[in-house]
Picture 1 (cartoon, rainbow, N blue to C red):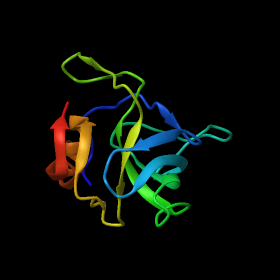
Picture 2 (cartoon, one colour):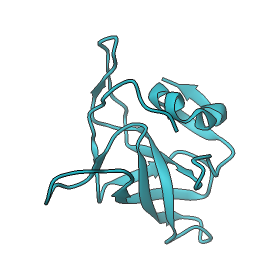
Picture 3 (spheres, rainbow, N blue to C red):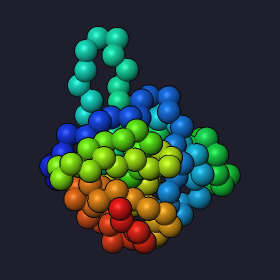
Picture 4 (cartoon, rainbow, N blue to C red):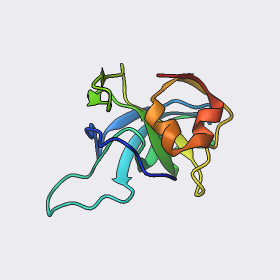
Amino acid sequence: MKAMTIKNTKGILVGTRLKCADNTGAKRLNVIAVKGFRGVKNRIPSAGVGSVIICSVIAGKQKIMHEVVKAVVVRQKRPFRRPNGVHVRFEDNAAVIVDDKYEPKGKEVKSVIAKEVIERFSTIGKIARVVA
């Protein structure tokens, strides 16, 4: 896990429901916590593209339902700015489930992911089809 070159706008809060972008069997995730968040009293923890979050699986195959998993945010609906001045915004919020070594549990990511994620987690980039 490397540092990110951008300071992106954080658009995902605790309690947000995300789409699962990989083929692990999970369909929907609910954010429980943000890994490494340091905030102020009474501030709701937030995450952005490339952040590690802790989620519970709320929809999907029976085998993985109601498990607590780690995930990496690969898309967010709130626009964020890249260093070249382009504002990027995706259709939905999505995440990829990872293990304790931050390697993806699924074999492929069918949808688009942000290039900031590949910069930080290169193993997710190897299984992705489209990078934007």
